[in-house]
Length: 626
Ligand SMILES: *[C@@H]1O[C@H](CO)[C@@H](O)[C@H](O)[C@H]1NC(C)=O
Ligand SMILES: *[C@@H]1O[C@H](CO)[C@@H](O)[C@H](O)[C@H]1NC(C)=O
Ligand SMILES: *[C@@H]1O[C@H](CO)[C@@H](O)[C@H](O)[C@H]1NC(C)=O
Ligand SMILES: *[C@@H]1O[C@H](CO)[C@@H](O)[C@H](O)[C@H]1NC(C)=O
Ligand SMILES: *[C@@H]1O[C@H](CO)[C@@H](O)[C@H](O)[C@H]1NC(C)=O
Ligand SMILES: *[C@@H]1O[C@H](CO)[C@@H](O)[C@H](O)[C@H]1NC(C)=O
Ligand SMILES: *[C@@H]1O[C@H](CO)[C@@H](O)[C@H](O)[C@H]1NC(C)=O
Ligand SMILES: *[C@@H]1O[C@H](CO)[C@@H](O)[C@H](O)[C@H]1NC(C)=O
Ligand SMILES: *[C@@H]1O[C@H](CO)[C@@H](O)[C@H](O)[C@H]1NC(C)=O
Ligand SMILES: *[C@@H]1O[C@H](CO)[C@@H](O)[C@H](O)[C@H]1NC(C)=O
Ligand SMILES: *[C@@H]1O[C@H](CO)[C@@H](O)[C@H](O)[C@H]1NC(C)=O
Ligand SMILES: *[C@@H]1O[C@H](CO)[C@@H](O)[C@H](O)[C@H]1NC(C)=O
Image 1 (spheres, rainbow, N blue to C red):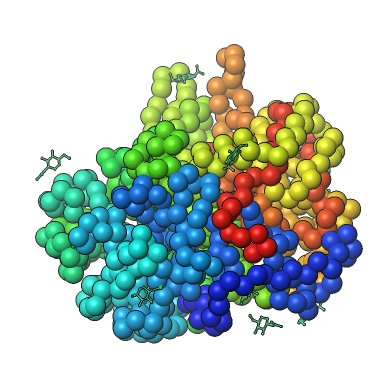
Image 2: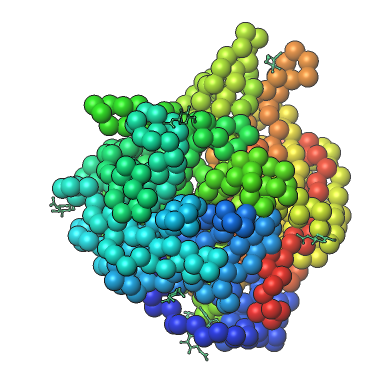
């Protein structure tokens, strides 16, 4: 969580209730756009608004956080920062119900511990008296930034308990339970507590079964980013006292996992760290240790108050006791999302006993939601009042350990966002990596409930051409598989042109020259030519297509399995169960709906392309017109 963003929250006017959002029906989406910054408030409410994503009725969406399954109802609660923190419940990860009218918060800043702001927190499902209990960062001073001197007492960790089914979290009438960073450490940040229980930690630390732990994200000036580890003191049932167990993970300042190629930079300060354990099927308390975290960094020289770069990373690894302290050592790392606006992932163990999992038959899962900032962390001069809302969460994702059998060659052996899991005698090697895919329920609902299905035949394609039929809206999911003849041709590119028409188009394609998926937004928005704050920079992320055993004796290039979700202005690109890149495409023209094949430098084989239109209205209980 970044302080400039919270300043924006504080500056937001208090909302009344029961407002209808005014819409300006006179806007002509068949003509060139005016300067959108000059339009009336809320006149752009609908054009880029997603249907199927989680976001409040209006105002800013900040970091997702504070998710939990309520043991008494089985409902999954999804939270996000919004005038404090707000949220919704879901019984299927598809349809959401606001906890409070007008997406009003369940906790607000302004108490004794948190006079200035409420930052991210996490929930113990059975906390004090068995009630869901929130441990969150209570803020007393701003600004807070890793680039400036840390103000003592600015971030503390406090408790609040669920009341009224989670519609209100009441703050406990005492001071913070973690009142200060560890003794004499000059921290860069100390926030976003992430609570968890884990038998592997109990065993190695000699704790009682079921002990709660929390990480706190941050770093140390001149030393680097860290996750600080704490333990509930001797099963103190009131969670009043937390014992500091050291810097569970620390990296040297401004270092990387390996260059910047596959896993960005560790940076100077960690934020929003989550710690959890996975196996091939999902969440498993005895599984492999994973972390997701935001890394903040900057190109030198460090400019006070400016953190121009953030990476949303994951890492897996092992832990051991070193001089009595538990230490984490990564064995692989990568990006959870390559989009520069995608950040602050917050996940939670979703048990098989939860309502969503009972309905879908899923076993224990780890579900994470990312934030897609709508104004690039507050620095874009986007027409915010005209849109009336800013930012969104991305679709929920299921995380697990993924295994791929590939040909044992230099491509597999190189250090990247994978590791060697095991070798075979026949020349293949098993790789392990983080597997991530859109949660099964929304994926199925988008296909089952499509209002129109377009099936475009594939085949050998060597030129750009538009599909036989275009979708009738900007809300759909597209999926296909692309097979490349060989990696010999470095000029080869293939993918799709979407949101395309006479005046605008966006290309999404894989290119071999640097093993990247590119989202070329340079011609994506006519509004960018009239209006400040409509960013059209390209986005790019790395995905290695390995050599895999062929049908006969030989090998072939792994196919590219693409799923693209277009939901208003949001575009999510998912590939091969291990790559995601999410961004905004602010297309203006009504006619910018065509989809086409995009190919350069040769011929590739497209599988049949399915386009399921309509997605699902995630908020049927919000009144029409709002
Ligand atoms: C438009 O919104 C801004 C900020 O929310 C507010 O200050 C202004 O009064 C609004 N203008 C009108 C005409 O409602
Ligand atoms: C929660 O309830 C308490 C006690 O009634 C009240 O003071 C507080 O304002 C409520 N919080 C929110 C976010 O409505
Ligand atoms: C903490 O770090 C800041 C930034 O490097 C520095 O200005 C300050 O002097 C340090 N404080 C202490 C007590 O070392
Ligand atoms: C803790 O749980 C494990 C199984 O998860 C069990 O084998 C062990 O006996 C338990 N220890 C205590 C102290 O209850
Ligand atoms: C961080 O590392 C990068 C790349 O190695 C270097 O260009 C930059 O100067 C370093 N930044 C600082 C603040 O040391
Ligand atoms: C959004 O519109 C509502 C209803 O007109 C208004 O009350 C609110 O202030 C607006 N909020 C923002 C953030 O623009
Ligand atoms: C999908 O459609 C069916 C009937 O067509 C409906 O009963 C169901 O509620 C829809 N599901 C969602 C998630 O919209
Ligand atoms: C498809 O369009 C792109 C971008 O305009 C261009 O670079 C590429 O050469 C085109 N492909 C062919 C086969 O003409
Ligand atoms: C997109 O490219 C076309 C030429 O193909 C150009 O006329 C148009 O102005 C461009 N639009 C934007 C939004 O860059
Ligand atoms: C659009 O309007 C805004 C707000 O009045 C102004 O700051 C900006 O310069 C205008 N942009 C253009 C391209 O005219
Ligand atoms: C790959 O190269 C393109 C230019 O062709 C560049 O825009 C992109 O950023 C590169 N990919 C990555 C992951 O840096
Ligand atoms: C080699 O063995 C693995 C594991 O048994 C199998 O998955 C793979 O298909 C085999 N590869 C070849 C080239 O036969």
